[in-house]
Length: 357
Image (cartoon, rainbow, N blue to C red; front, side):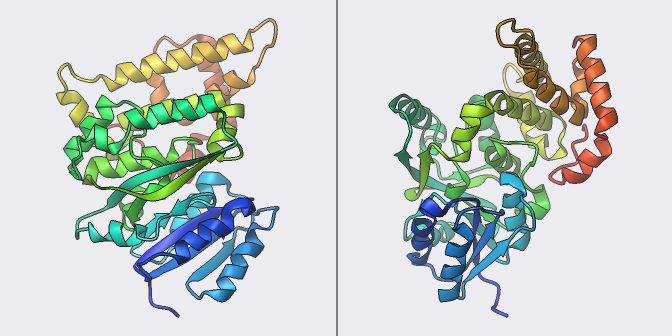
């Protein structure tokens, strides 16, 4: 059996044949050679799996696995982590690219206590409207590591926590393709949160870096492809309200998950203090109002919003702090809990203990 590599490049795939060859070729061009390529196929129905197998037949560093059933986006990320053998994990999505010196440069800045490293990324736009492209460019122009940390590269946990609070719920780090993680962070801080559909990456970055800090490499070492079939675009077009509920899940974790104590302490030291509980309560009421109004819309009633809201509220015990939720919602949460026991949820939710301080 081959000795464990320094880096596991994890490529979770699902129906990604259009860009997969280009993605894998960017791995083969790496100047740092001590890596394995772990490709985990989530029951693709196109030729993604066959393409991956052809690469594996030509290079022993490639391993190709196929899930017995579809795990979904976050489930497949976590499956990659479980199967990886390297000391470091470098995610690369099926439609993204790495610059040739990506691994070499990111590893060169690592110290024995380094847990997470991030770099700059280019954005490749395909089948994206000009308006959406301009909005995304404005967003990443405002929320990026250079601006947020004023060109600092070795960022302490305290500085990172302040940045999160000052740039509330804005992903200034970027997508998994720009991040290098020591594999041990997953045993220390848990896996990606499977209850999230959109911000599962940024929530994990916060969970780790608020405890360990982060190192930033101010170089363009990866490319993120934005196109009409990307998961983020699909969510934006068809699951927009469910994306908003990701915020509530994160607010709940910030308040109750023991791993977020550094962030809570930093919030308490702000002047004036950043009241996470008040912010959470405000957002819960705001999201409930949107869901309730959608269900009562006379022209086009949509009860799915209220159903999604009730499901999320039933899964997280912290929702009980919202005293002024209407009886109809509290009764709905109670009924949902009868059908979906909280204990089974916590058994699946292995990323945290989610208990109050």
